[in-house]
Length: 247
Image (tube, rainbow, N blue to C red):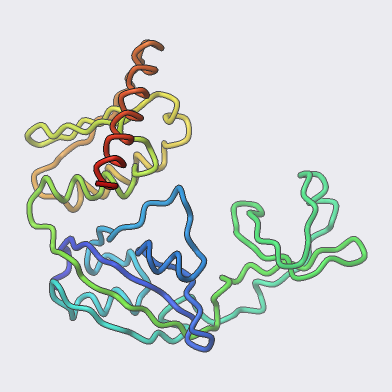
């Protein structure tokens, strides 16, 4: 694949030594590995080839693959999550956690000053924390498959729209493509928490989808009765779909 091509990719990552799956885009494999999350959508994800969106070793492998091809790749730590760095292990006063109403315990993962860390130990009013990635220093392997190359503008936009805003219910978002711009309407309750997501989506689209020069976001306030009606219609559609599936 040439750099800049947009493709749909399925992948599954394992720790080589234990054969333990730690991430996957496929629902069946997530269930088998005990990683399944009910609210998560499992499907091939849109990737811009050569854009450093994935691990270095995977990004390189995609450049050497074609549509429909599947490959297993072995990644050394430096190609994946890096080597462990002792400088990223330190001690934090227990009081700092207590001030945040956090009771640290060994093995706990949490966000500390905008950095993810793992608690190693708690003793004598001090907490030993590790800011290394949990998989740092480990060899990993990935099964990757390029399911499809997205060639037309509409399917590229829709794929990225789902990637960035997939967590929002269908009846609370809408996308419209108008010549060289995109207009996105979402329920206002998401506005306060999605500022960074909007920026990332806009940058991705305007830099990588040909013909799109701007992205406009608007909020839509619905009457309460309309919201209830929309919810009823959605539930009815779900019931009908389940009934058809049983037949």
